[in-house]
Length: 575
Image 1: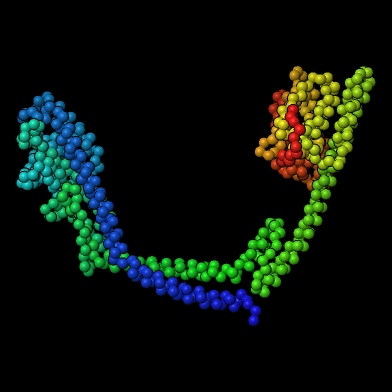
Image 2: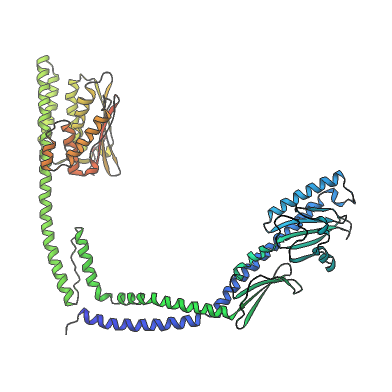
């Protein structure tokens, strides 16, 4: 029995079903044993450590703030004076101190107000709505005095000493301030009120979960701050304790219900992942069976590349009979198409050469008629050896034109032909036109089609300089830029009006793109026949990107240029 794709695919599908079953079982066990309570504990511990770091950062800011406030107070000489009444110096000290307090308060986002009560009853504060009598009797000052410490923290409360404004819950830091260089003589009490909501913000990530609870206890273990939220106690609870820099403790409690809910979510994720892995498993099986489908894929790719013109035979013949018949038929078709395309290419090349020869034939009689008429005119007007020079130049040009064995010439040979043409025009214009050459040595050896530059020079003489008075010049440029030969013929003639330049550009472009019948109809207009022919030959021989580029400014001159592929032969020098 011959080996077929069908029999092998049946066996591979059975293997695929087995692999998918194994993957489902393995993923299920993996989800049960891996995504357990430990994963949820690590997540809670990470959030708790982040909250602890944020709280410690807040306490460090508070510590720096109270040192800055005490330092600012001690900088003034008024701080250490014994003065119960108000003097001009003490009033000035009050203003400066309260201004500094405002600066400190704005620098720390969680601080609401700063108070300093000296031992003479004078109150310095940032609070504009304070009742000074109620402040002197508030519970925070009593707490500091009762604890007999230099500083303490007051748990969150609503400040009764605020009479108006935005009254919010605050917690306070209090500190006894002493005189400088007088031992333990008390100078006053510093109180800093802070937003309770700031603690809620820092612990909001943990308390946002109904199965977790984060709160703060004081140094003695008493409750300092507890969130206003519900907590679901289901199953065994777990506690995490994190000490803070000031002696507080951050306590985090979570229940097993949170872990069980997370485990259910993980199981659901595993099911989703399972449905994703099933097609991946199928793809892996098909990749493993590539030795079966590989020959078909190779044949398909060859057929697609055949659409772009690439004729590539298949050298490795498949061991499967069905594919082997297709590959042999494909190779036979490729051989026939290659032979047919070769013949079509030869026919197309002959057609293009015929068109180029026909375009060249249109230029030669036109120029020769003008040259012979010039020789006749000079012969009638005067007897001069100039006629000999003109005849010599004309003979050299004629030999160049009649050399049909050479389709392409070097830029140097084309330039020699143009110079002979310029020798003849110098007699016509009585040597009043200066011709300049800017030719790079590497450009001389570049190959190009014949009779591409002379029509451009003729156009510059006849249409650009003939009607211009004064200094007249033509510049011929030949350079190589990025493996392309750049040729430009530029004059300082009368130029071309913008509307006429647009019409001329459209006309020569339309002529270049026209086919045989259209070209004949378009060519009946003999205007700018030299430019049309040159542009048509550039279009056929080098492509549309090599067509003529014409720029002109009235009364300043015209530039005609083109770029072609710089096919080179050995260079002979420069100009």
